[in-house]
Image 1 (cartoon, rainbow, N blue to C red):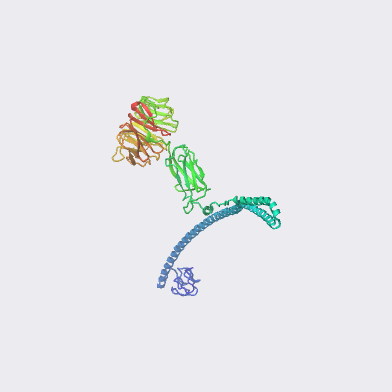
Image 2: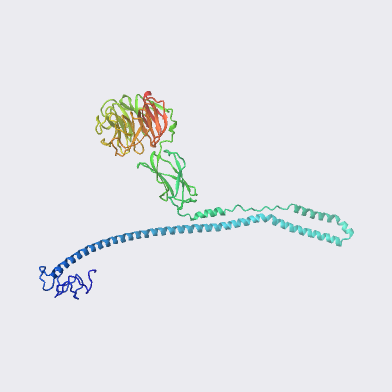
Length: 612
């Protein structure tokens, strides 16, 4: 070890049998931890020393040396511990590196497997191409051979005729020459007619044959597709498709509508971002509703074989959805994304004439359930129920303060199979079944938590919390499911979040709380996070109104606000921009919008519910 310096060590611990001096260099000493046989440790000063009471100068030096030795041992122990810790850390790092090496080896095995698979695919593709090319080459050459045969056949036949004509003319010439050389004048004149006719026939048929020679009609080769084939062959190397570079575009620009198919076009790209010009990829599209109990929609994919794919999705429910487009399970660019499915593709800018009316005495507010039944609060301290066609079905309630009775029922809302009524003059919220059977109630007169002074409206959030309009206390109280106070949005403060005498409340698709108040000219939008101050967390304001009394918001975030002072209904988009105004109303109070986008207004001045 580092403490052993060999027989030349002059360490202070060794005193030898005759010497008490620390300078003793007895050859029996092998280091500061080693003493000769008469030494019993750092306290031993030789055979004549009796212990630590010895006060000679040499003994004092020895005690100092013993102290130094103890310090060295302690420091060495600490350093050993430090080295041990360093060694442990090093071993841990080595183990982690080994783990990474193992993981890398596994990934390399996967990469090698993919490489082999790709190579096999490439070889198989080129083998098939080579086989097909050879077969096509033989077929094309045979086609050319047959074409040339067809093209040359008339000329081959003409050649045979020409040769026969030449033979006939040669024989005719021989006859003429023989006649000239052998026949006498009398014989020649006797054969004149026959020779003339024979010669004329030969000459005539030859002239006709020459005048009717066939025209050469060549077979013109078509445009060679080699260039196009070579361009397509470049795509043979595109074996790596990069989903992150692939993109999609929606065919129509308008938001999707429930039960109506909408389409997108996906363009696949390779790892360099270049367009892929071939098909066959595993493209999949899904539309997932944010509500867990609603089904996921799988889209239809049409492969155009040129690297593009048309996807068709048909939403079955309204509200917020998540759209996912993947290639072999990996998301493409801008996937997933959030979108909102609307009730209808209606153009609210054209709502000017009511399409139907329901007569009812002194209507105050209105709500519509999923079946199209219309619930109206107001006159005679009751709630009247009408079917989709406007025919009366039943009435429940009646004047009083008992369970299931109302005293000036105002705002109403439906959540599932429950029906919530703002029982204004009884200072409470009652919960009933849609058939009118009492379930329970919340609230009483007062200014404390869960106490009210005039209840004008109520709405329910996704968690079942109730947003209750506390009219004369100038606040919105948000109650838990059990009726206890969660938090309040107080309006009688200074600043932009102030409002007075609130009348209506509604929730947008993001869960933000929209408040309309009789003494406030604009709609105030507050956060629903619960971490609100005295006036709530004001997000924004919109509209220029005169005593607004009711508000409804559809699944697309479009707001419908009744403007009592202007006898109108204002329609705002999700950003708060005015889309349209329905005028010529008469003292409108409440408003509702159904799943198909139809708008219902409680037009109290004409004792009607107007349907647009």
